[in-house]
Amino acid sequence: MSYSKPNSALFTLEDERVVVLGAGRSGVAAANLAAARGAEVRLFDSRPDPTPQGLDARVTLIGNATPEMGVEIFSDYLVTSPGVDTYGELVKAFATNTMELLGELELGYRFYGGTCVGITGTNGKTTTTEIIAHLIKKLGFTAEPCGNHGVPLSELVLGEAPEYAVVEISSFQLETISTFRSAVSLWLNLAPDHLDRYPDFEAYRAAKERIFEPLLPTDWKITREEEGYNFPQSHLTFSASSSSANYSYADGLIQMPGAPAVDLASTRLRGLHNVENAMAAFAVINALGLDWTAPPAALLADYQPPAHRCELIRDLDGVGFINDSKSTNLHSLETALSAFEQPLVLIVGGKEKGFDYNIIKGKLANNIKVCLTIGETGLKLAELFSDEVETYFCNSLENAVVKARSFAEEGDYVLFSPGTSSFDMFSSYIERGEAFRKIVHSL
Image (cartoon, rainbow, N blue to C red; front, side):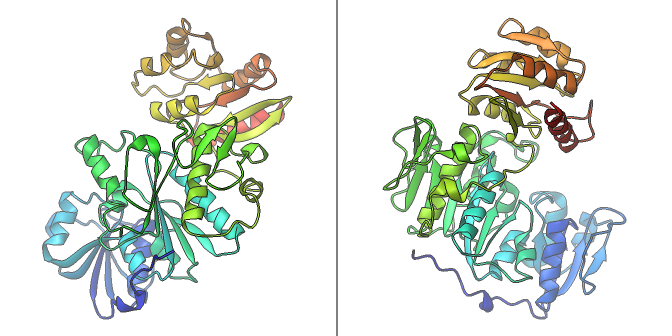
């Protein structure tokens, strides 16, 4: 492939004044990287007494940061963390007297000498990022998932940087890129999200689309066909529902250009959304020009998907038990419901967040055999869903799992996808998912 990035040795921070906003992991990574490259670094945080872990002793840490403080601070570079609102008053004030504003991702990129793969979208980013990194390593190269998932890029380049940085990129991170450019840029999907930060959906889309702005025509773009993008060259599409995509799905098999079809049955990936995540990852590998050393499914046989995201916990008597505790909103529940073609016994419900579940009601008749409701929303959902599908309220998650097993038959899946947060019964979606896992393994 023709991808080449600017020589990272040409960018220097020696004796420059660098201000970093936000003392979370990304901010600490940026501050440490700048200090290691010879800059005078001040790290600001709005909390009165921030206690970041692993901060370089050469970095000056300042709490109680305010916009009034910012207009008095001069810097050569102002680096923002993704969690700090790019368009907020704090950033505006600190940007008053700086030569350049950039994000942590952009800073890390300027010091990284390897090949970047960029992944963005509303859902599926983490799983797809991990699959791509897993495949690249299986093919004999060094690669790490990073960015919005796991290790910040600035932290990655402080160590022995891998040949490939597989970067999950949020809309927040894309707000502050300028030279960041991927050899392959992957757009998974887009649905309304983060509307507390953006004025409308189109502003959110515009932030996401910045992943394409720095690309050359020969840089690869991979998009889900339904998203409607049509680049004139170096463009691949994927879809589990459209036969015209470059990577498609038929009769339970992923169809790849010029290669044998791929059956994911031997992997732990389940659901049509994971089919799309896998085919997007395969497209990335092919766009990078890497040679397959074994069939793709064989390379994924030992891949363990991220916990609590449509995770296959166990196959018991031909029934698959799926843990989707990360489903904390209606969009994630909708995604899970549309991901399976097999009959489902659904366990749903949790904390009352005021959602309008009528948008889910119409989807239940598709392949839901029985619906079991739990939590604060349980009684309401049982009443709402009962005229669409056989529905029962259960007073605990354990009772719901036991009842689900009694209804499920060979070839079915028991899908635990709450569609809301966990705080009525558990401290987090992680605790909730681990409880489900423990109950299923006790059956």
